[in-house]
Image 1 (cartoon, rainbow, N blue to C red):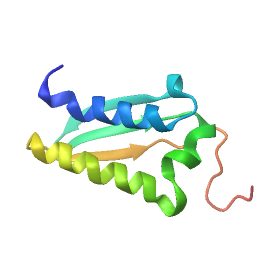
Image 2: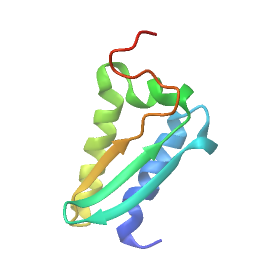
Image 3: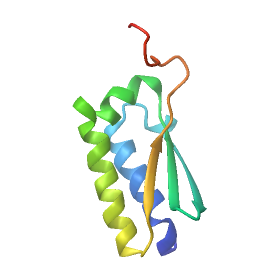
Length: 93
């Protein structure tokens, strides 16, 4: 493992530790002019745990990824994919 993909390995470890369906956790890593973009896909049943109450868990993970990125002199952003069958804005549960 080289230093440049530590962010991806870190994210996978944290999310798999939180998720009830760790085998469904997928992280895609893309580098562009904005820095590193990590796109997270999880089982729809795990979305609530990953996002957390008022988005606190997702925010904490993003903060930790920024720290990991700073250590490697890179900017790391996290995008969480909306799972198919998830509740879209404006829809009722």
